[in-house]
Image (cartoon, rainbow, N blue to C red; front, side, top):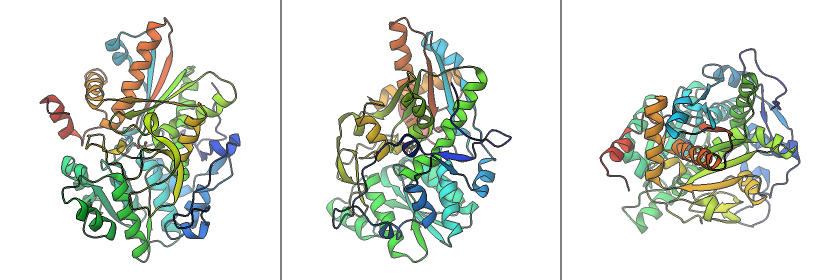
Length: 431
Ligand SMILES: Cc1ncc(COP(=O)(O)O)c(C=O)c1O
């Protein structure tokens, strides 16, 4: 399997992000202005994002250079390890080889830092002083809090209320980095107050938290909004994962037959899979699987249409698989997968049959996470456990067909700050 990356640093970090849609000439439907329902004018997005981010969002270059200060920040933890899960394979009694790219090795414990650093740098470069964002499980908020600190920005995080209660450790970490953390829905914004008026016990959702963060950004001078998934530039930043993985597999002389990632908004799956998809488009046999929660089945049961990215209808409308912007998923512990929509790029690939999606019940993902920690010693984030469940399922299917396949999955984060969830699992209190 050949890598598609033009160049790497001497330590093995790609020097460019990979833009699959530009490289392969795949079309994307334009985002629409929520007021007019016409394609949105780029100037309008300037209220939310700096120019450097917007240029990447709409880039038509196949390879987008990674700025030097971002590469320097990546050097603290990249390349992340690619490992074979040998003991996990033994426990599964499979003939397949399972490899994982371990993004939990980042300082904050997940892949989210790859885009947080790039976004914080691009904002700081243009004189922005504060970033506002939402966070589900807290992984994205933690990553942006650290990246903001690194590039001298302040950071306001709206944290989905159910996660705020379930994961106090994440909140503490964000506050240690200097971020201001507010449980959402809150009374700080119009969108939050409206939601609380409808239901004072609202558990929160990513859709509501996004509305609050967007409102915060447009009503505070010097503040821009940052999103941890879904948008083209976020997926672009995550392609460092797949480019490294291709090279690491190449060094081992191994060719992947299947590539798997969990799916919340689509960034870790895309980050790993996009460089491999180029090879698939060139004719190589390759299965790409998105693993999502059964309680928030955006890709397996959603509709493909234009919808809002948030609940209050403040964001541009994008064409994606969606459960509807008002959908409030059950408060499962994989908070980062509780999103009603999906990345437009992932949605397009699914519609074209280039990737597939599967859904898993919460308890089955915790079972597989236990098997993984017992064999490999790494506790996966509840989100990442969905990818492990899918990889194990692919291995079982291949065994049943008498095939030996190489399955690569993204271990997008560790679960050391999700111990409350694992505690509930061990005590039989998981729903
Ligand atoms: C560890 C981890 N994995 C996966 C996700 C899902 O997001 P995405 O689909 O953008 O990778 C999240 C989101 O918070 C996360 O924290």
